[in-house]
Amino acid sequence: MEVDYLIIGQGLAGSALAMALLDQGASVLVMDREDSHSASRVAAGLITTVAGKGMNPSWRQSTYLPEARSYYRELERASGEILFHEMDTLRLFENEKQQCKFSDKRELLKQWVDDADKADYEGWKADCGGFLMKHGGWLDTQKYLKVIRDILGDAYRVSDFSEQDLKFENDAVSWQDVNAKRVILCQGAAGLRSQNGSIDESLFAYVNHRCSKGEILTVSIAEANEDKIINRNGWMIPIGDGHWRCGANYNWDEFSKGGTEAGREYVEMQIQSLTDKPYEVLSHTAGVRPIIRKSQPCIGHHPEYQKVSFFNGLGSKGVITAPSVACHFAQHLVHGAGIDPELLIEEG
Ligand SMILES: Cc1cc2nc3c(=O)[nH]c(=O)nc-3n(C[C@H](O)[C@H](O)[C@H](O)COP(=O)(O)OP(=O)(O)OC[C@H]3O[C@@H](n4cnc5c(N)ncnc54)[C@H](O)[C@@H]3O)c2cc1C
Image 1 (cartoon, rainbow, N blue to C red):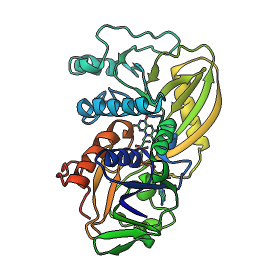
Image 2 (tube, protein in one colour; image 1 turned 135 degrees about the vertical axis):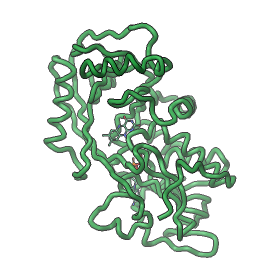
Image 3 (spheres, rainbow, N blue to C red; image 1 turned 60 degrees about the horizontal axis):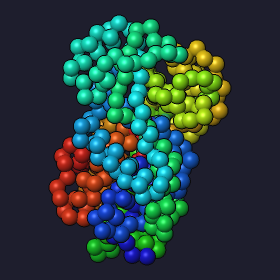
Image 4 (cartoon, rainbow, N blue to C red; image 1 turned 90 degrees about the horizontal axis):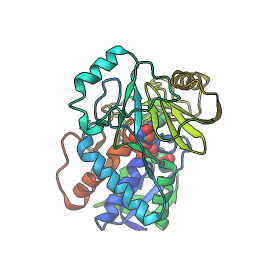
């Protein structure tokens, strides 16, 4: 089989890159071994426009957010599925210090925060108040990945790729029966993290990273107001029918595949800090965030094997960054446009 680009991994990175390359008229084959615990399969899919304790917009949010929204909307039109659920987020303050910090920043954040104090705290533990953030929501990542697979059709293959079997000939690279101009590794944490020593053989083993495992509970809560996402340290996302996705912890040291007792306890503690309502845990999942430079994605080529490229490091912001960075990378790959230095992978 002959293709322009062989993409390894169909998470948020590989999916957006495949779409961007197809848009540029290139041919692709996407291979994925369908890890059930991959970050994109378990992610909450949140876009919060004022994030973290610092209460800041995400990196490049003003540019990347409109591009991400129009990318997901276009896919919704093509597929007839609802993928991005636009929804306000009620951000609750932890203490008075946060209240003051927000007051100081309010003018700077006005684009992302409701003008009036419209926040409705009914049903939530909100002793210190909070604010309503706008223009965010959540992506149904499972549905999104399925829509992309349907679009790809025969250009998608379930396969467990191994770098050791790559063959480099003349101006091309081959893997099993596939000959491509280039192979692009979009493997998320599996392409970064040490797994039984296999990372030592990885072409991109030199990339510095600090991945973080996160755990999520899906719970049912009767009679909670389901019109907005709730966020303090943790978050709760109403996904319909009285079900909420709740999370998530950051574990920097333990990368086992399933959920842990400690992770579950942490998330339950977050839920109880947000509401007194009784809840029932329906499921518990976990995945590893691929973090290289905080949540700034990295793209580029291997310094020695120039036909092998890399798109990774989406961190905890893949939903907002992947579409724009994928377009930028596709422009480089297909038309030779320069790579933004802030996105360029380290040289090794
Ligand atoms: C608990 C949790 C909550 C999160 N919440 C959010 C959020 O609210 N908002 C947000 O924007 N981001 C969130 N993230 C982060 C987001 O999930 C990641 O940024 C993003 O999913 C990473 O996508 P990726 O494509 O780089 O990697 P992955 O999703 O890991 O995808 C890599 C793919 O490569 C495949 N693969 C790997 N190795 C091979 C191989 N050898 N052969 C074949 N296939 C292979 C895997 O099967 C997988 O499908 C969260 C992550 C976690 C863990």
